[in-house]
Image (tube, rainbow, N blue to C red; front, side):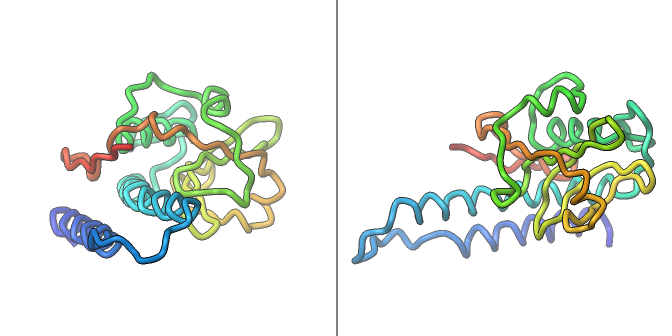
Length: 188
């Protein structure tokens, strides 16, 4: 599938999902629980996050691991996270290391994970980081397979899981897809 067709399909899918989730503007006869409204708002906010993560994964999948790397020719785990924050979530930050990332945002438990949360692992005295995706999977730059999607339910990843962190919403004002300037504004 050519790139332009893939971009168009992704945009149409996003618009369809957003359209399906919008309300008609009529007020319900019964009062809505504020907690339910908040949960619905959070779910709607995740659609562009998931789209951006999947777009980044499509672009970087299979990129070989290179310690300190930040390019499609080679990237390490923190480089992949930094490039995703910079390229897809438009965060104007200098290069971040895993040790920098572990101090960002707030701690969340594994049962609270949402797409876009950072997941950290302690491996042989070092740290590893990736993005939580969906369905108990995460995206990361593996030392053996390059940029891939892995399962948190894999016994290895379960044994080295350290913690998860959620970045504040105000860190990202917009989401960009496909490096061609297509932007999905995300306003709070």
